[in-house]
Image (tube, rainbow, N blue to C red; front, side, top):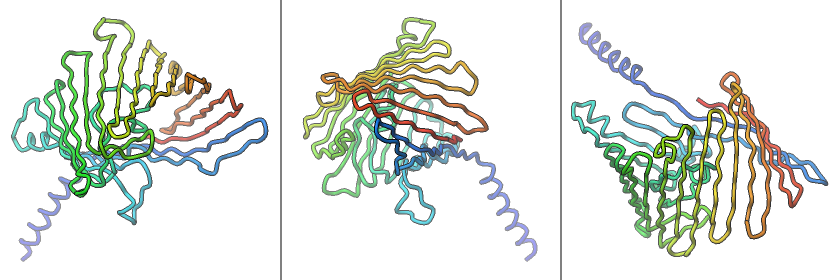
Length: 331
């Protein structure tokens, strides 16, 4: 009996040691702050203070659990949304099945949407932060992503729980030569983030990116990209075009936006030549047919793993200034 207990204890310890030894990484960020608005008549701190949880994820060798941005609850599972991704190619390789340049990942989640593949460089965070691209709406979707090196990647997603709309999405991206990439996407049940609506007839879109510096052998960074999304039922089109440049500690970009007939232009320049310090200036021209100018600027300082930031903007037409102090912890 004693030998059996010792063997059982040894087995438990071996399993526990394996779990502890398995590398699991927690990444994400927490940001908190205030928004203070001033105008010629008053100064007010908005009641809706900011406390954001961004990109929270647990990552292992063969899987990733990503929590969707938004509320996080430890006692109510229905509140939490996210996606579990399993990297089958890596798991099979660990079992002795080498798939070479072929990659295969499966995911399932309840975050509400699945984004189509794109190659837009997204200098202003319009696509990545706000989700302005082809996105399949689905309450509980699953997705398979297959790739071959850096040459081509294809994705298929669907929501088996919605028998009424039968949402699905297909997308693909390719890099035929170094420095040039393109992508296409289609879904039959699309979320329109611009209008905060659902297009039951779907949407399709495409994107292209060119690394000009790599193609031309420049000694500074220069890239151009564009993305376009068309909603079939609503007959609305949304297009973005961006240009990015960088040289040593200076970076700049400009983005042109054509949102269903309304044109906007955004330009930003930043400097990072001082250790732990970041600075930027930004100009936004909303609706070029009746220009509404917004001037922005900000600075940040990183100390002890915490970024202290002060951002502000001034709307010329209304003489309203917004000041946003914040602190952010990233890990």
